[in-house]
Image 1 (tube, rainbow, N blue to C red):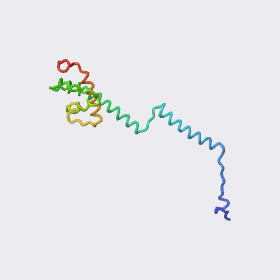
Image 2: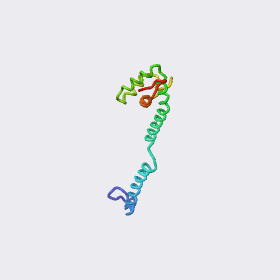
Image 3: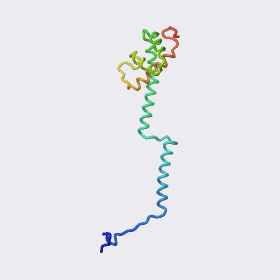
Image 4: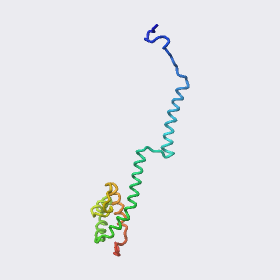
Length: 143
């Protein structure tokens, strides 16, 4: 005994969803979206990629904070530090200070230390800014 649709009559099942199902499903979807917003905005949740980027920035900031005083000390120990300071002072564009410090060589990293180009540039920029704040080098007053 087959029906006109090809299925036996006992296999036909007409199900109508309850009237409350659509609002409930919509509530679940909206609630889930609101929960994600609450996690991200209010509770500090972030994606793994965002967390990795943030931790890399914080690590770089820590390296720069640690390496900058050593860079300034190496700068001041150079035999021609005062003349080099005067050259650096004459550079007006602060974005080129890092290039100048990097070209001086050996100022940024410890011997046998390898740094990423971004970290090297950040240390060089911070080092240059601190070097320009020096009042004297080796007893010679800077003007």
